[in-house]
Image 1 (cartoon, helix red, strand yellow):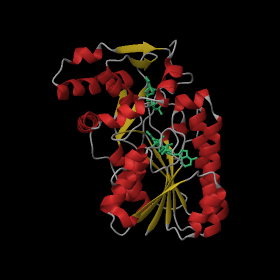
Image 2 (cartoon, protein in one colour):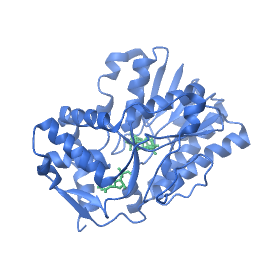
Image 3 (cartoon, rainbow, N blue to C red):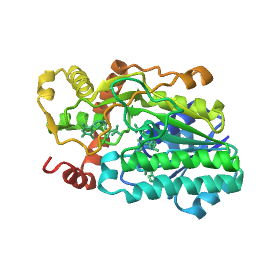
Length: 345
Ligand code: NAD
Ligand code: TYD
């Protein structure tokens, strides 16, 4: 089986490519990635050597029609589409590239898949397309989409384009909507790796608003295993929610992370907790996400396996073990972005 993965040099894409190559010896992977600020070849270091014949990297843009069409013309059995601009705060600052990549790039892929008769297409959407919940209830696949940020609006547009190509053109697309991931290789602009690496640097830990926004947290390996299940058995035209069954307020989650960090470093948790600094809230900040993933549980037999305590243990151990990886990211261009995002907050 020949798989085209887009965005395989990002956080979830890299974890997915590694998992597929490790556990599916019959699969070869073509990874199309533009290497934006979030795409990092180091995320797939060693993969070429270990799985040589089964892995090919192509630096390219999902919006580039000839490149995408040329790849799908080579006979791809399935596409797993991760490539996206993924950070909400950046989308608030500048939405254009989110529309270009997330909407335009998905359209290019769908058209090429249509033209070339690609037999399977998994669209990696997000729970953020549903908008925000009150204190009760959880997102179900049949709920209306009410995205609140330019990021989530662009993902909702892409998600619905997939539906349209399936209904109108019969393209066999399956859509997944997963909650907040954490784990190895996550870019340190997202909550957990930002807090973890700032804490190690003794820098302030900026918690937005009152810190009581709720997210559902899933360990990235669980998400990747769910995607494999959808790739194998998901029904075309269907949407599948994935979640970690792990709702936490941000401030509670950050506390848990810092206590785990202190435990692994043999330090006093108070040293880290005292770095927490409440800053101006994110505009339009969704209050609460929660997932009902009964459908994928019942239909495809998937459920998350890694609980939060275990996930945080693995997360902290990985970042402590990969200091060069995150320090290289946090120097250079990333520093300028970080400054503009938090200055005056
Ligand atoms: P990421 O930002 O870490 O990685 C995105 C990758 O896409 C990078 O390697 C980047 O170089 C690549 N890319 C960006 N624009 C591109 C383009 N025009 N052409 C080719 N490659 C391009 O993102 P992530 O957190 O790994 O998320 C991956 C996907 O999963 C996204 O579609 C995101 O919406 C979705 N998702 C993420 C989460 C989460 O918690 N991170 C949750 C649910 C869904
Ligand atoms: P994030 O990792 O950006 O994911 P998303 O916004 O896609 O859910 O943020 C997770 C939560 O953490 C969200 O409620 C915003 C909050 N947050 C902070 O409080 N401080 C920060 O510096 C960041 C990046 C996020």
